[in-house]
Length: 387
Ligand SMILES: [Zn+2]
Figure 1 (cartoon, rainbow, N blue to C red):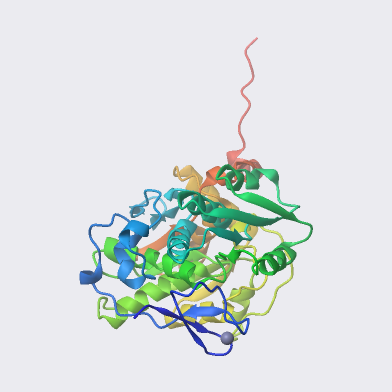
Figure 2 (spheres, helix red, strand yellow):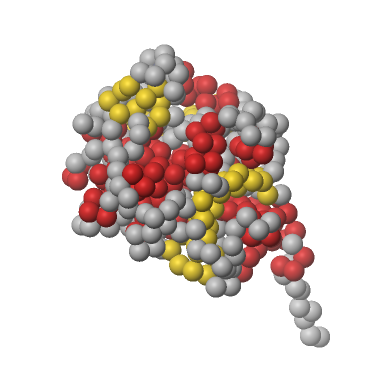
């Protein structure tokens, strides 16, 4: 029996084998309850995320789109006092490949040969790469205001760029309108993408010797990482594969605090926030599509949702760069969050606390350069020439 999707609006259930990205009623689809997952369910012949295929939408081995994914490194960095999970080492430089690999593989088995997406960031690049791997014609809707540098990677994979005059919501609306003609492979809407992200949780469990870490700290915009990690540990808990659940901490930029504000206000779902600006562009999200589910996941794990300031993000980025990790500013929000959580006593600094490094700095060299120039200790010194 395939994993099915449930409509969050009307409650209708959908087979995962039907090529749908939302319910006929227009409602958002979510994954049905996870199945129990134990160590025996791991496919040890697989090097990466397909090790957990038993917990993912079904795709036969020969149909899995591959770019050489493996388990990403996990190691304890003594200087930073954190366990770092290096998801920025994925083929496109972002953890989004976990979702794209599963989503595009599944869509391809359903005969989809042409897809659209509406992200100008890491998800857009990742969807474009797996479309290239699967010989799927790919069009990405982006705002005409997007900087050319961000579009270079998407274009390089052969995707067609469709420039929309307007902001993020206008771009999404254009993609939804076009979805009557081409399949909308939306990383925010399609539940198979989320299922792929759950491989991060399974991988951490395996790397920690089939146990939970104490805390998992992730950057949070739409909250896909929170939902993915929570889903994995729910499946593991069902099977009795772990003795306790790790606490999941969602870290937001103070300029986009929808989840953190709802958490602090004990609300069931977030309210839209004002349009701010942040260096953490990967989590610049005014109102998450799955906000209520993200809040439930954080609370289920006895975690928290918090905000960090721009300055805290920049300091954390400098710490990571200073240890040799060239990551994008969005990734630094997780370390900034861990610093805040240990200072407040929420997290034991000597615990097994994982900071997920989500995206490569190679995607944002200009932004990183500007940040480093702003931090006095890192300003390059000019050495006077001897005369
Ligand atoms: Zn529905």
